[in-house]
Length: 600
Image: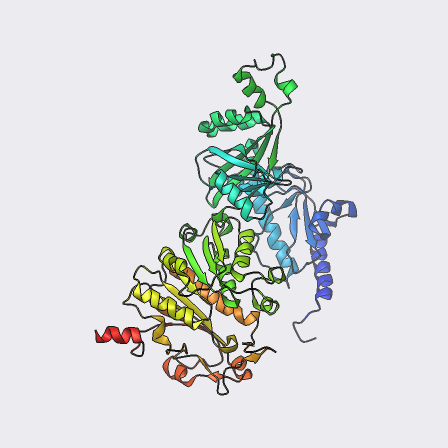
């Protein structure tokens, strides 16, 4: 082999031998027995060594490696260490969380990596012993709550806004999960959009409670009984006490309580299920209907055990940016109209939904056919369905937290009068239909009607060798789409030129031609258009702009094209291509609208 090249499997064996010589020879360690290794079997550990310890300052330490070593770092564990949740960064099997999740290591120096990890582990042990890192229990609450949940506890899915104050919430119990929201409309909409079959009588909802704490709990505070929940509320959220009492005595067999608190890194959640004592136990000593309310509350919030569960956040801000994207406050309110849900438009729609645009109105009159699915966001399940309505159905199921995704199976034109009347209500219109007649109409509507929103026009050059996304701001003083096209829709300054004509292929049908390109080429157009739309919505772009993806020159030439000389002279030679550029979209004297405006 050339110098520096190693066979990975041989190198693994060499690395294992080097590490063993260091740990057993220089550190006085020994190999772990099969029985000792079994303790860590859930981690895929293949080899381990125990370094001796003799006191609290230097406890016995296990060094563990898995099947990916030396391409993965070793782990450190304390076989005789504290119990889980006594120290932060100590997992249930005794393993220490020494390295951050995205750490990288040298794969060629296994002994050096082991020394560094052991040194960091010793620092961590010292911090745990003197409790200088005790606040990590609060800052990284979710990691520790996960260790405390009950094995068979039903998980929660939360749509709750991650803010205070304490308040009643709405609960729906599914077959395997419990979903909670701030109100019935939110919960009903999420369940419906998510594809859950609604019973004839509708979904059945129950009362629950959110207790908002000023800071996260530490393990000592994790409730074990209903009485612990009451004490937690009295001590840290007194406004929740009356609501908690009201929830538990209304007679439901179970009461769900969500505990929420702020951290430096965002809100954290914990789920609790309180079970009402059996009626015989609850009413013991009293005639039916004669037990005082205070006694009932005391018995419902007494020593009965609570079930701890994981809360999976599915609210908008968590899904889009994990609570750290400041633009979501606007994106969840913006309304976009997308004309054309074909190869370009469908991909753009999915990217916008994934980015947090909550209100998308999709318009297309065509049906999905078999050749479409090779370069479309929809697959075989949508065959012979309308592109817009099928895409809307799919996006609603995939993103049930988005409130306003709808599809309309209609053709945009002069006869779509209701849609034309509705245009001023949108924050942005995107035209991705590739239809010059529709684009010209949209442009004329925008230029003649000042309340019209800004528009992005997206299109491809032949064989997707280049893609354009042109932004036309609102206002008659702005350049318009026609400034860059002739009267029959031919771009005045394309990137590519096709000496033998545009390379269309013919289907075995009258007038059925298509441009041969695939899904990989399309991804550039999707990203280009969606990124421009997001920049417009968050206020980054205000001037008329043409963003252009320029494909690779070898792809253009292989298809029979070349760089357009006029483009090269005006904008610059793209060279080997494979780039994105942004240029001003300028008013043109060739444009009938701006020519008349200049004359006036």
